[in-house]
Image 1: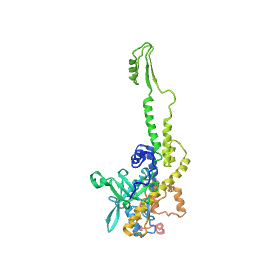
Image 2: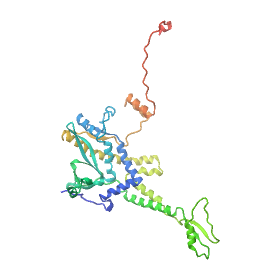
Image 3: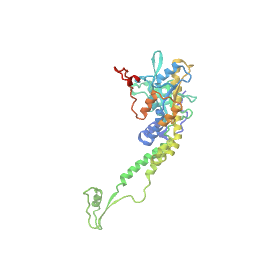
Image 4: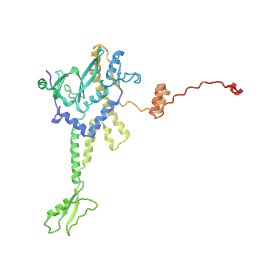
Length: 411
C-alpha cells in the first residue's frame, strides 16, 4: 500500500501542496526581488563547467556516458573533438535549467526516455513532468519514493485514467530532484516558503501606496461659498471641474474661496515598509548582497557573499549527487551491468574561478606551471583584444649575383 505523504505540517491553506504550486509561480512571475533571488542561486550553477570524471571506470564506459550527456571528460581538451549534433539529443544545459525549478517549487520530476541504437540504450531525454500536472506523489512505507501520478492530456482521457487519477510513473523510471526534504516528504521545501508572508505584505503595501498616490498625490480642490449662498451644488461642480493648464482660471464672487488641499498630518512611510520586506525576501535565499543596491561597501558585499556562495555550492552538489545516482549509474547499469564501475558527474567549484590578469599569467609561466604554446597565445590575444598573429611569409630563395663585388664575395 502506498501513502500520499507521511505528514503535512503546513498551516497556511494556500501553501499546502498542490495549491502551493500556483502561489510560488505567482511569486516568481510578479515580484522582481523574488525573481532575482532565484536567478542569483540558479545562474552560477548553470554557468559553471560540468564534466565527466572517470572515477575508475573504463575508457569505453566513460566515453559512452560523456557522449550521452554531451559533456567533456575531465583532462581532455574540449577542442580535441568536434561537438556532437544536438537535435533529438539530450541537453544537459536544458535539463539543468528545468531541474533547478526545485528551488521555488521544492521538487522537480523527470521521466527517463531511452532509444536503442547499436545494441545499446542511449539517453534520448529526461522528460520533465510539469508541477501543475502532478496529481499525486506516492510514498512507500519505508519513506522512499514509490511513484508519481500525472494527469493525462485531455485527448488521452479514458475510464481507467479517470479512476486511477492519471498516469502512474514508477520510481524506476524517475529522476527526482527534491530540495531539503523531511523524512518521507518528497514534495521538498520551497526556497520561497520563508519569504511568503513578506511577499504577501509587500504586495498589499504596494497597492496601498499606489492608491494613496492616486487619491492624495495631487490634492483635492475645495470651494467655499460666500456667506448667504444657498446654491452649494454650484460650488461643488466648480471644484470637481477644476483642471490645471496654461489657460486655466477660476472666477469667484466676493467672499468665495477655492483651495487645493492635501493630507494634513504625517502619513506612514509605506516605502520604508516595502523596502524592509524586500530585504527579508533576499535574506530567505541568503542573498544578503542584493540588499546593497541602496548603498554599501565592496568589502561588506564580499563578506556577505561567502555564505551565499557556499549555499549555491551545496545546491549544485545536491543536483550532482542525484544525477550521478539516477542518470549516470542507470546508464551504466542498463548497458554494462550493475557490477561495472561508473564514472561521475562533477563541476568546477562555484566562486573558485579567478580573473586571469597579465601579471598572473606571467607569474604562472615563470613558475613553470603552464607552458606558453600556440593555444595559450591565441587565448591571451583574444582576452586582451589584440589582433590575431600574422602568418609568417615564406623566405625567398637566395640567388647569387651575376657579377659579385668584393664586398658581396665576403658576405
